[in-house]
Image 1 (tube, rainbow, N blue to C red):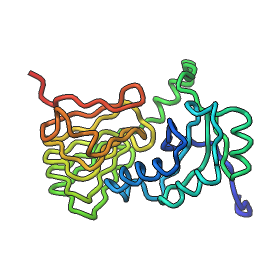
Image 2: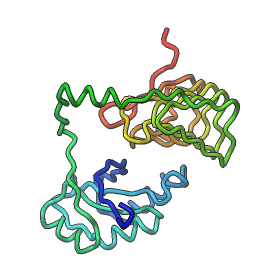
Image 3: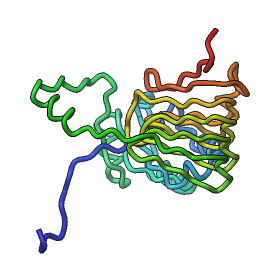
Image 4: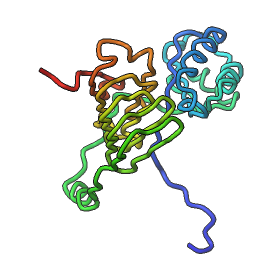
Length: 234
C-alpha cells in the first residue's frame, strides 16, 4: 500500500439532470441564466447531465449545447436517454453517456448483509448551531442531522446528510440528504428560502412562493420532486 499511487472505487454522487424540452439554445441560455441568478453559489460548477428523452427525434448541436452550459459556469458531464446516434454525437463533443432509469429498484439485502449493515451503523447526535447562520457562512453536518436554533440569513447555506431543522426563518439555502438520503426533510418555522434541496432535487425561491411561503413548513422529497406541507397540522 505504501507504493500504491491510486485506488479506483465505485461511488454514488448526486448530479443535477437538465431535462430538455426544446433545443432553442438562445432561450435555454436565457431561462437557465434567470434560474441560476437566484442561487448562483449553488449552481456554480454544478455537474449537469442532459436528459434527451423528449428531444430524441431532433438534431442536437452538442458542441453549442456544451458551450452554453460552460458559459453559465455549469459543468456538463454527460447525457442520457437519447438515441444511439445522439449518444455517438455527444461523445464526439466530449460528453459521457450515462444510463438513467427511475424504475430500477435495488434488490433486497440478504439477512446476513442486513445484519452487517446494522452492525456498522453508528449513531451520531445532531449538530446544533446556537444562533443565526449569517450571510456568507456555510454549515455542514456530516452523517447527522443539523439543528439551527435561529435563522438562516440570505446568502447563508446549511447542509446536512440527514434532516435540517431551523427554529427560525429560512431565508438562505438549506440542503438535506446531501449524500443521497431520500427519506430526509427540511423543517423551518418560516419559509422564505433562496433554495431548498433534498437528495439532489431542488427548488429555488420562485417555485417556493405558494401556499406555505412565509409559514412554518416541512419539505420532503416525493417521486423525484419536492413536496411542501404545513409544519403544524391542525
